[in-house]
Length: 331
Image (cartoon, rainbow, N blue to C red; front, side):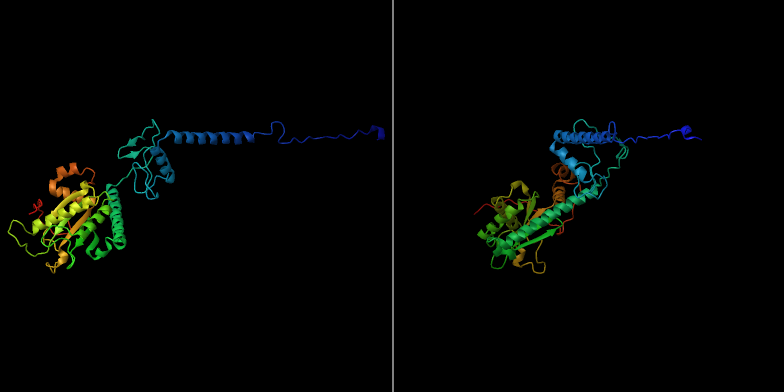
């Protein structure tokens, strides 16, 4: 074939399109939508926090500390219906919100059962109260060691925890009695001890029981006045000294005289240590038991409405007769 009959070569040019051409794609729209959603959620949370009360904000804070709604994982139980260490199962109300509907048996629909064991609540309340009394005992022990007024009498101040509460006993010594012999007249240093103790006892909300004790030496007088009246008068004198030291009057629940019926040293009833004043900072269970003994269940339920509904504690000391004796007029 001649050169004049050859066809010219065909050249095909392909244009490559760039991905960011035109409107640069749609990925930025997704990012912008996420940003707007996040900002809307942020301003909604800020509005809710600003519109709520302090209690509601505290409830929200406690919820976010343990949102799992499982027991035993939170360090602090939030207010409301809770289990031991668990989060609240009740809905946080921020104005107009309704409680979750509950099925029979106390279960919230779509949630878990609100299991609050009253025994666990009672056990925790007793544990906290015992811790408070033990803390008070430590404060008193430190004060006895460091106070110029109490340090000289540290061997006469005995502190211990009993089933009824914190017991503070002020005992006699051979050469340092608390009262004049055969009298309910307090020695000046005994007044100082009681007035110092009053400030510490008044720091806790618990009520106290005061009891006076004597040795078994018979009182040298006619039968109109005996160790029973003497112990009651001495307990009442201690009550007045505590009030003078700043103790609130309504914190005194009971003042009794027990004579020599509950000796400190049972092997030697004539020992001076048996002459003592016993102050018991009662726990709530002992206070409820005291009300039951004196007034009966019906009155105790009315008078002690704030006390937990628990079985009375059996006193550690033997049963004794309680006399209510008015102080004898000075002669």
